Image 1 (cartoon, one colour):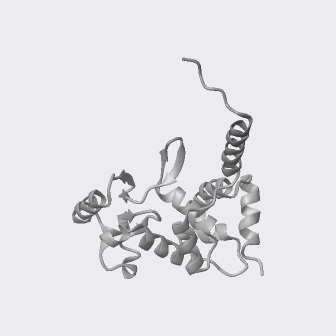
Image 2 (cartoon, rainbow, N blue to C red; image 1 turned 90 degrees about the vertical axis):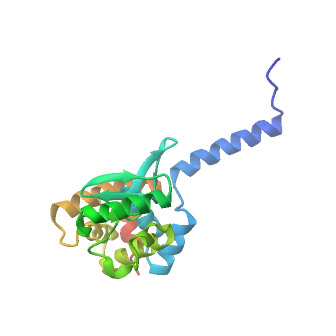
Image 3 (cartoon, rainbow, N blue to C red; image 1 turned 135 degrees about the horizontal axis):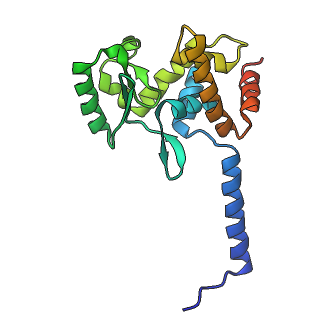
Length: 196
């Protein structure tokens, strides 16, 4: 059987869809949950999304996407298929690992250092709650008029130094991807979002 031929309007629609895909690759709009958490905290949604890509990103269908049921236990990444599996893994990790060595969820919220922000450790596996906390921390680490990348570095390492600088460089690549810019341009755009 011969392949069906496309009519001119259908070809135009297919071409337009292809162009939309290319345009979508040029700039990524953070998903609504990121936009909402960022808006509530008063931070740029691209910053929150870039941090989540760095913290919990996994490769799915050829792209890096944040994964909500992620743990980091003593420097070892663990990914789970479901929230229930991640909660069971978290509870097991809590029995054998100091809480300051366990990070949870999209923003990899540290159990020990951020214990005042949650009632139950498995609450951090709620993507909305996790993003709200990550956004709050980013906001707290930011000084008005300052480059958001500095706040991003302190999100990872409040004391700063080379670990914070390495983290900023990694996140700046994700930020550039989200903003559809070169990494240097992402830094400039992050600065502009904080200008009055």
